[in-house]
Image (cartoon, rainbow over all chains, first blue to last red; front, side, top):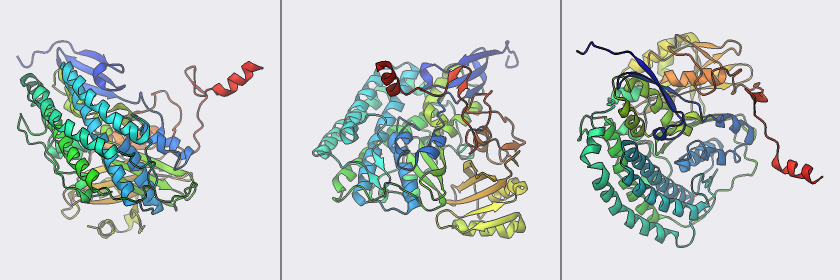
Length: 372
Length: 169
């Protein structure tokens, strides 16, 4: 029976499709409900951000970095900022680094909440999505108080951050974390341990550790395969060495190591670690300036460097080439979603069409980050 | 190992096929013979001292008189990095693909082909990835001139402020 095949069907999925989280297109070759292959077609959100960088100068590029990944824009800010600081040999004041970490970890929470919420929605569980978005809105409120924007923050500057924490913000943040922690457990009971949900995710889209490294998967997608690797721990940057936190990895508890469920659970556990980091950072934050003195016409010496930061979608690499003028010669961003998208064609072989949706969601692919 | 030690080790193995080892303060790199990239890549991946199991970044830079393809290698086991570069002529730049050594090269090389027009010999799927398939030219080249329209869609926008002014008159 296994050799019996029906006529092959070619289906178009996207670019406008509710489960693709942005503008993505797949050409699906299917035999009945089983896919032979899903060929991704990207580029619908290409805005040539790397070319824009060559025209607007170092300070001027900061708001554009928000648009590289608008779901976790703090990390793109941080990546660009640190790359320029490394080029220009600028030291960020301690309080500035703390502000960066606090803003970034709040952003990681928001990004993961969106990711796990939409993952439930893709499978058909609408209610958990509204809970996750409610929590994310509160984080957006906090960040709005910090920098005036809810998504495209433009909070960081070369040499630190634009604004100090507003008065009373630390207490508010602590109160929010007290509120969020029990919600995370409640969320697990509502969605993560639901039998239908687990069965839709376990043993689907299995990636081995070797394959993940070969395809350059990063962040939660890599940790879901059991590789204990986190830039925050392993190549420490900013003030992350000051904090005590764990790096959760997939363990195949629900099915096979490296399946969609493992990747999902890594995100769920990572949120708890972010809460841990935030509590320590809010308690330990030193006083002092938040922004180093950087000339308005910033001209780093000629040279090149690469910076890696751990964004919500994993290791984000900024490669910057300077020629000594006020405009970067070349900027290249290597993002997690770009790599994750490259593995979908291989993983989709033999999956059901309905599982393609969970596979995309479990890899947490964000379209603007692929296309830039 | 330190980046410079790695480059020295590769230099000892391949001799004059490594054209230059640049000891820079930030990220040291080596410029190599374009014809040797796959061989050197295989060596770095399989050498027990280096174990570069990941091609973490591949990008291209246009320097007006030549084009460079930059490779950032990384080892999860040894936890070290190395940077290699190849210099290519600006007309018909071409270099062998690393796709058969690291799978991640597939998409990154498609991107370089798309934006800088570097051809990767032996690549399984050398198509444009980000730009439309009928796009002319390579946007990240320094001499690229942005077309004024694409299929009747204008790429320039009139400033709304100026338009208000002319209406008043």
